[in-house]
Image (cartoon, rainbow, N blue to C red; front, side, top):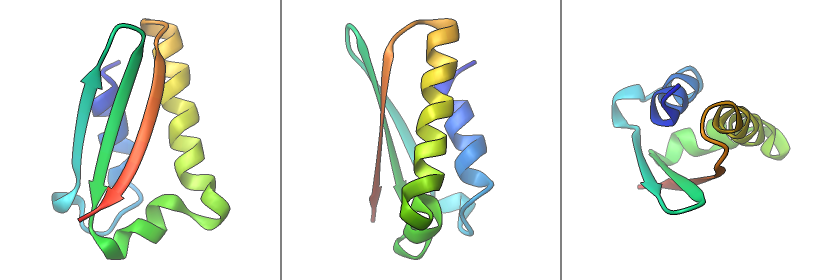
Length: 80
C-alpha cells in the first residue's frame, strides 16, 4: 500500500479540516520520511492524549512499510 494514501486515510479520520491537510513523502536509500502539515486547531487531535494517536499512525506506517518495502519510516507532524 502507498504510505501517503495510508496516512491520508488515517489522518483524515482524525482531523476536522480534512481539506487543509498536506502530506508529503521524502524517500532516501533506507528511510522514508512522511511530513504531515495540519492546521493549528487540529494539531492536538492528531497528536492525541500523551501522543497515542500519532504513535499509532507511526506504528501502522512502519508495519505497512515492513510488509511491502522493508524501509524505516519517520512520520513528522507540524502545523501551519
